[in-house]
Amino acid sequence: FLYKATRNLLNWTGDTGAYLRTTMEAMVLFGVPPEEYFPYDPANVDIEPSAFCYSFAQNYQTLSYFRLDAARTTRPELLREIRMNLATGIPAMFGFTVFNSIGSAAKTGRIPFPVKTDRREGGHAIAAVGYNDDLVIRHAFSDLETKGAVLIRNSWGKEWGEGGYGWLPYEYVLRHLAVDWWTVLKQEWVDTRQFQEP
Image 1 (cartoon, helix red, strand yellow):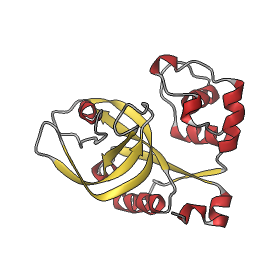
Image 2: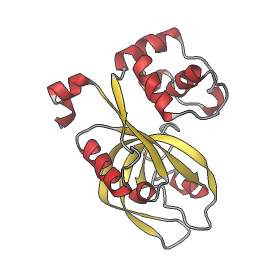
Image 3: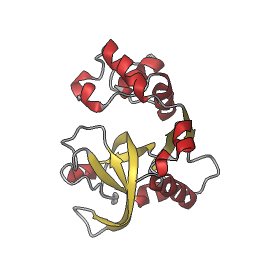
């Protein structure tokens, strides 16, 4: 739903990708219905969501959004900011560079940090919803191990990873391979401290 609504704002068709800032704008304007009402299907990227989906999505509208990786933010500062937001229950959306080694994460959701022999395949946008400072991810075809990862919610359906969730090493953030970090807020979350409740 969100991918199509965003591309509608851009007047784009096809599986062209989209800007994360425009995606945030779509979340403010239209909202996002639960995935079960318009599930991801790569064959249907240009199918228009029904009026019901647009109407239902209004129940899940975002009121404001802001960028976490402003121009002068260092990578360690960004990682601290991401973890702080996630610790309070505030998710983030970002883009990352995809390498062919992502195929090894299809069942486990554990995306390895790339090695020199990995091939760049493109980019992908996902949501960060948690983190684990102690999680170790090993590259399937080398001895490279990374410690610490962001819990992600992928858009490739529940068959990918662990029910649609996976892990992206902190190294992606620290080495500029995970960029364009955005987060959303509703004032009521701040006023009622809902984002701090377990």
